[in-house]
Image (cartoon, rainbow, N blue to C red; front, side, top):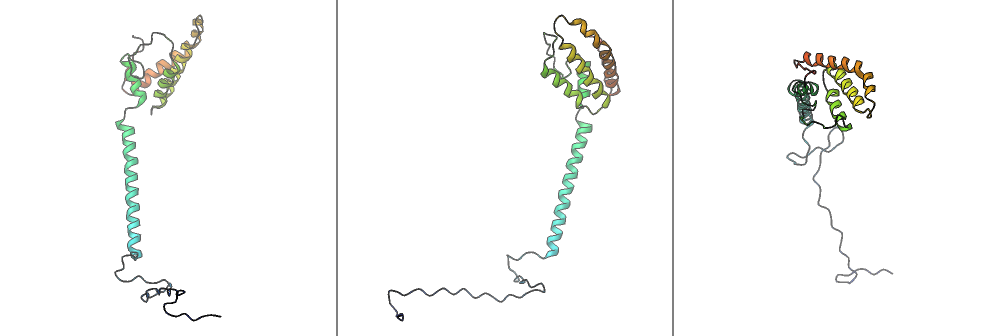
Amino acid sequence: MTHPQHPGDANDTVPPQQPHPQPQQWQGTDGQPLPAVGDPTSPPPAGKNRTTVIVAAAAVFAVLVLAVGGYAVWDRFIKEDTGVAACKAMRDGKNVDGSTEANDDDKMTEAEYREARKLFEDSRHEDIRKHGTALIDVAWQVSSLDEGEEMGALAFMGPLSTHMSGLQTACADQGVIVNLNKK
């Protein structure tokens, strides 16, 4: 049996809260509610949003073009080519990396070989790249010969002279005269 609830009864429950009445919303032709005038949460009209996106995309594109163009100018015209820098170092009687450290031993270390070869590999000038890397490779092979195998170096004389003269010409084409015959 159910008992009617009386006021002040211990079993009283709080009546559910009624939601605030919502203002009437008008619907557009697409069935979506139209934003209230002056509503700060309403999105901007579609035309303004599209214009903003187009302007932002154009600005990003312009910055990208300027960055790529600036890097190309810096890389091509401002930054010195690594192969030409190696030519200048050889002209000045230094190691190809520009250092003046003299190795007591005529042996080239693997780290020195890789560093010197990379200077020529990274050159923008094909002829410096070709003759410089080949000359460093020959020098590495000669330097890697064991004691008592000096006669084996004679096998490298042809490629050595070919790439030495080729590198001299390639450096001269870039305005750097290298005399490899002087110490």
